[in-house]
Amino acid sequence: MSFKAIGELVELQRGTTYKSALLDQPGPFLLGLGSIGRNGGFREEKLKTYGGDSPEKLLVYPNDLYVSLKDVTQSGDLLGSIAKVPSFIPCGRLTQDTVKLIFKEDFNKDYFYWLLRTPQYREYCRAHATGTTNLGLSREDFFKFNLPELTDERLELTNLLNGIEDKINISLVINNTLENISQALFKSWFVDFEPVKAKMAVLEAGGSPEDATLAAMTAISGKDNDALAVFEHEHPEQYAELKATAELFPYVMQDSELGDIPEGWSSQRLSNIATLHYGKSLKKTERIEGPYSVYGSGGITGSHISYLVEGPSIIVGRKGSIGTLYWEDGKFHPIDTVYYVSNKDGVPLSYLYYLMKTLNLSSMNTDAAVPGLNRDNVYRLEVLKPIHSILNKFNNHISAIRNMIQKNNLSTATLTTLRDTLLPKLLSGEITLPEAEQAVSEAENV
Image 1 (cartoon, one colour):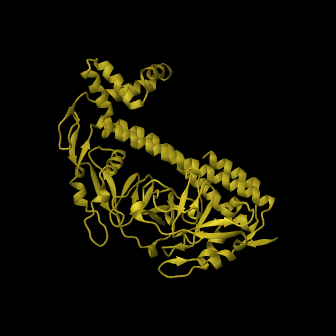
Image 2 (spheres, one colour):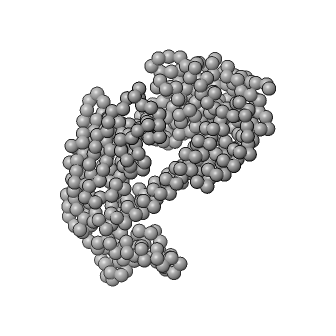
Image 3 (cartoon, helix red, strand yellow):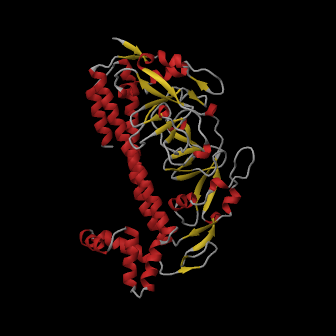
């Protein structure tokens, strides 16, 4: 078997610094360390565009590859990690922390990408790390890593890995869409009061209560009168449910400390409908890898063999990244940089989750050295409490959506495990494709 060193195949183009004042201005997407996932892969959270200087040599386009030769943590998860520019990024601009790969000869980029996702390569990068506070991987060491030739079997495995990644990405897109639907529903009902205002507009124009209910049904479903007539004929039970939901919304607004709110709803202190509990310290040196997620203010920081809270629950960043919000369905351990939330007075957690997204908690810092979120300040916030019948309807909708998200997450977890099982075989050559293809098929049917 013949090998080629990375340095025989590619040249590197390092990105440059940027001016933070020009972020979110029209221009290419800025692709720094935050755009690369742990141990490789593209990460699309908190992407920003950049309106500053972006010469062509710093730009990347869909399917281009780029890497990180540094890591600002001691984990080494980003050291040498590779990412592929996805199709929804028409143009990206590299930062000083990322490096574009320029191929010197015709070589299968997908195969190259997956070789740099293998655990053998990841271990090589960690073994060649330099530095103490920040880790670095020299160009020379990066170039020295040897890649085996592309055989027919390895090509088939590459295609299989591409298919797995496509399925994972599709599942993530679906989950993002479902989450957007949930947020839009909350905004329509509890921020813009669209069903109530639709009723009011009809009555003010001289319409009947029945016409007002029909207008609220349109506001809730997004269907016009003709579409509702078809919906009633084809799905009478769902139509009846939609009508019952619309009838729950009042026809008028009333004054409150929050301004005009629907009649019968109330303004409450957050402390009346939610409790924020302190997490419990769990040092990294004390963690034993297990089945339960460990949450800090930046999200999941690892796993542990035991849990502190049984979900569903909401996690709120308390120290460092304050006001961050996470939803967890299963059992988990919240550490002392977060609060976890329980509900009170019959208010569903689903409502509290989207309500807390509107409170701008990230702006409520009370500490100087390390940002902190004071619980008493959060408790004093005045918030909207709708009537329970509408809250229950909202929770039913959100629960159905969460069930779909959970099913997608289960499928994604299965596919991710399968991917991680197959990756070592790309370098070792121990390939059993029929079994792998069967496993992919089974994962799709989870």
